[in-house]
Image 1: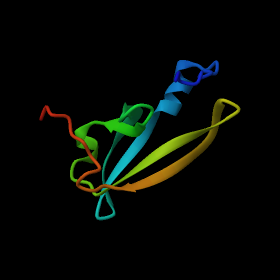
Image 2: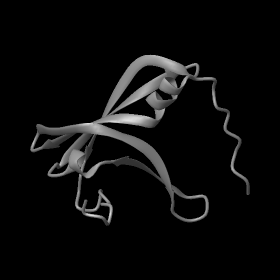
Image 3: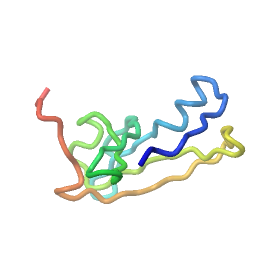
Image 4: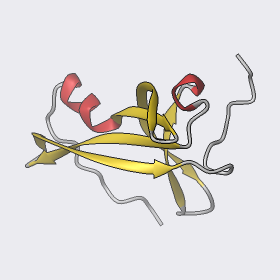
Length: 102
């Protein structure tokens, strides 16, 4: 089974980055402790199954129990100026660290 065709709108590099990257704010017990950016990536699980993931640097989420991600909405394949905040509780199994400690 082939993947569906994806039509990429005619966007500038800056507009494309708006939709693939997110601003992150990390919290510990409700207090902001860090900020950074992340980007979307899908990991193949099995066959056609995918796990949508946000990839960021360790220091952005280190010591946090909650993270807010700020997503941009599009309208007619263009930036709309609308942003949505999505707050996520972090658990012991919600993060996968890179094997390199550096």
